[in-house]
Length: 410
Image (cartoon, rainbow, N blue to C red; front, side):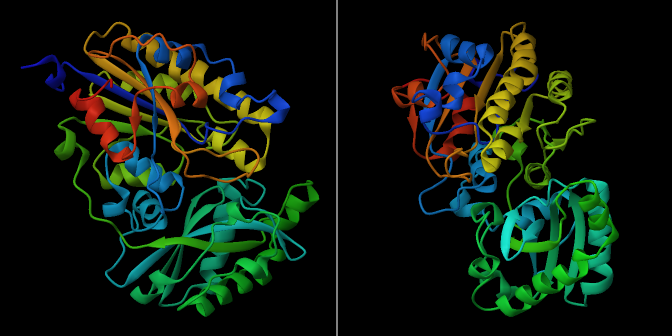
């Protein structure tokens, strides 16, 4: 047996995703990116002692979101397996879609006047959101429309009628600050969705949860926004594909739904919120422990992406630094004692401060460990990666290289 094909018992693999970390050079930072400014000694060390490269996780022409990008990172070609964001989140919630059912992502958003003020409903708590979704279920559900609570502002609406999957919907984080009427669903099935969205406004505006939030100076979650629709994809398990058992740690239903669909275990970390206040240290600790009996772990941290959507440069830099200190650092120390191991770090996609939404540009990645010689790279950054010889254009090939040890360098 070659060292590149060691058994699960011998090899340990860790993939650490800082969602949306990649960005553009900013005038405010003297032409540098947040990754170039942030204090990230652990990611820099991975690049130095291993290899850094550039990867396109979003195939040309596909929507640049964590759904498409994470499928690529896990080794599933989105052009073959992607059917929409919502069915991936529905899988995490245990929602089984029938053959004629379509899942929609149901954001709780804030509308001020006639504009989308906040795609995340003031980052409403999950407890508050459950009350709102329960009210939606009581008043708007029908034999063909059902609502299911998720986490914070992220929920699911299931609609019967397979044809509705072709309706044209816009992600709310792409149009924050813009008029509601300019971005409502279009095409076959749109009138039903628009009716639900408009009626939700009437219902949520006066709800006690929102009255209380307004009295505290918080934004109300006063409308639903339907988007990201799709049907359940059929995918081979991760173990079938790569021969290793593993786990996923994330506070986001999307990531956990993908994990569930491909047979990876879900590890819940107390205090993991998917926002700035997430339990970084807990994620690092649980990830390290998971490798005691599993060969693979993927850790996802959402906070840099949220900061990008909010246009909050300081929070983005802080989130990147917390990810490096509390997630990347502990995993590096854990695997430094495991000779047969590999560690990889990367964003899934960029979420630039300037545009406050996702882009499909390539992102930097770095890996180190068995079979990966030191490159001596000076930094973990977009600029350093762009100058590397390691350029991967089909992102779904990344995981195969990482686990099977093929083309770890160019």
